[in-house]
Picture 1 (cartoon, rainbow, N blue to C red):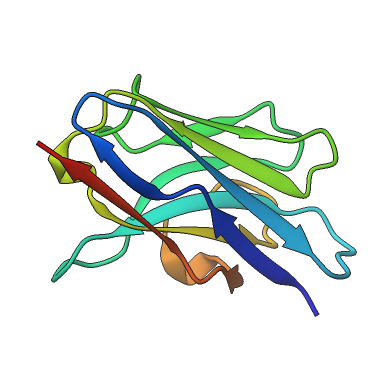
Picture 2 (spheres, helix red, strand yellow):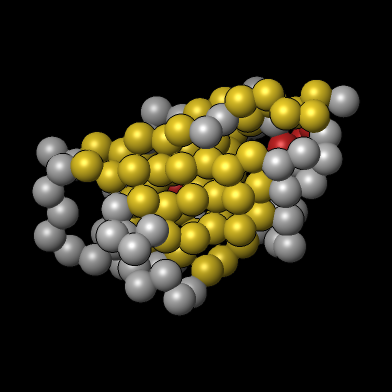
Length: 124
């Protein structure tokens, strides 16, 4: 049973930084890509960033390009999202997900396993 768990959310002032972590546990027998998504109140879940199996390819939504950085741990069971220069509009629940397609995809429907999410709140 594969499980995905996010951590690192919290309250930060505008302009501050947070680093989210996502850890995968359980049996995995294929390569997989990982993605970060976020969902603000009253809005649909949206793609934030993705990374491929080897970690040498990344993709970002335009709204976070140059501000957020996604990376994988050496054991490939951990992925991080470094978020800098946070704005109030970044406030959302952030989710980590696995796609067994192996390549970076943007659509939530292309991801196979999700974590429970971690809340990020940005104060003025």
